[in-house]
Length: 179
Image 1 (spheres, helix red, strand yellow):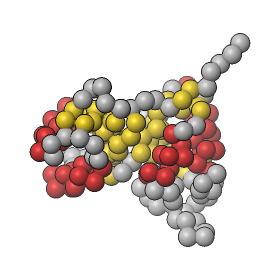
Image 2: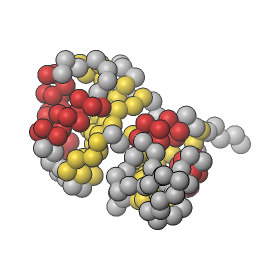
Image 3: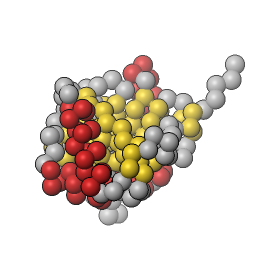
């Protein structure tokens, strides 16, 4: 685990209990992935905390930065081990309450066209059920699902939590390996 401090209050920056990013990497390079993302965010927030989930290659990043600022800092870098970075704009219990899910989608979805990506870890059939529910709400919001758009709405279910965020669909920039 990449950890620079515990929950320390210093110059107004407080790391809270909700993750701001989900970072994925190959399960064989988790430690290097932790260091990569930790070093990038450390420049903006020295109190960053990166924690492994029980699912190989899935990390949660805790920082005092907003999800938007953390994503902006992390997403425009070159990585060797990080595969994907997802901002976490909402954290809901699974299954999410209808009202809270609608509020979250209204807050997060800023485009009239999105690509919806739902992934579940630790809860069977959750992705299918939540995909249907989110699609219904997007239709009422007059948001169309378009596989060609560059804006993705990520709905990540990890055990009893639902993490929702929107960002560019492209994976992070990978460093070239020269031999």
